[in-house]
Length: 585
Image (cartoon, rainbow, N blue to C red; front, side, top):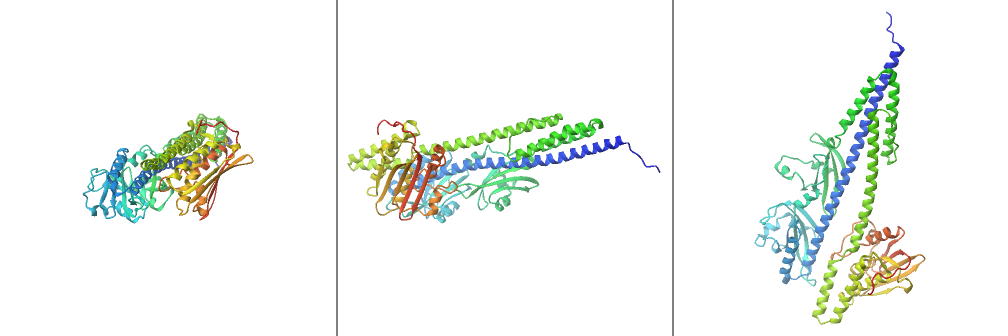
């Protein structure tokens, strides 16, 4: 039999067609895998950022509730049994001033009600002691807890609440050994409102669980209780933190898990992969259609078409790899088939938008940080003002008119420098006058508790500095160094010029700190807590203000030894003298 022969033309045509088919198929696979991988990573990053933002908002809200609890705790701790009416009125004012607060109450350890903004005085004591929030507070030894959601028994409000509870001391300062349970009930919808506008795809959502796996908030809470919706708590319990991709009820989904600061909660963001990859089908269809068109084209133009399509695609792939590595400087759109040109142009637009968004995010974050530091700088401590005015009243009632004049004058000077006509930069003399006024007030409040001295050379009195950087350090020295001492303390402030810099040294002979405590004071990742009176802007914020204003070589350094004392040195540049901002002090 004669063997069937094929013309060279046919073989070349078949070979080119097969090559085009193979190449087109390879491109389809590579681009689909790359698109899927890139889109999934982008979705995970976006989800993680959005969950982090919600987490931050919840953290701010929790901190706000803790501030309310601190105020209530200090109010109860410094009041006697004769002040229950005042405490009741204060609690009612707190609840009336906020829509998210349902009630504030105080119970003895046997469950009997001391004061409450709700009608609970006739409630059986065993009804209170059997509540989870009550038992947690009793066993918590001063730690606070968030419990919920639940409804309170015999309450005039039947909505779901989250309960803040803590075991605290009450009575006057000389007799504060009695204990009570402080309860603050929050409207359950307060947490829901924070997450309302955050969704991932069409079905994604955010919910909160405790570290024990108990749901605190879920947008489908009613369906869960009715048994028509089930949540994958096993994945959350098996993964304390991070991003997990798992399958649940036949759908692949992304779970972003983060811890909520200052609580025993975790925030969980859920997004479904099939919804986040909705553009994959259209993308794959476009690539397949392009491949079919290539195979239909005639042999004479097959090679030209291959060059027109393969080379631009290869270049586009290289540009995508550059973007994947973080290089956002891409070339102009490439020529070739209309589909390739459209894809290239869309890719250029996408890269340009990503680059602009990254620059905008960096700029916004820097501006946000500066605004946060400015807000901390401008913060007026309400407890300090309250206690100072209380001391003025006490001096007036005791007939010490000279003391009243001195304290009011010091307070006026303190606020005059704090305001400083809206200026952020003042002279060293004005900054230390602010400190002097503050210490005059504290010295009168804590008689015979400490003495102080301030040394400022005349030749650098008008050197400029950002305001309110020394008073918070002195405040820490008084409350954390001098106050716990039995003997009289001493605080010495000295200012000296060293080369082109100015060193401001605050030294006390207080109780001091261990090395690890000193290290944590300037560690942004360490946990920093307000003291029990809510005082202190925080040395780390002063350090960051100085670095943002003057550069990384300036800021705060700390040295301390237990039972010896603490020394804090603030380094700022020696700049040209300025005129005093305040006309008279």
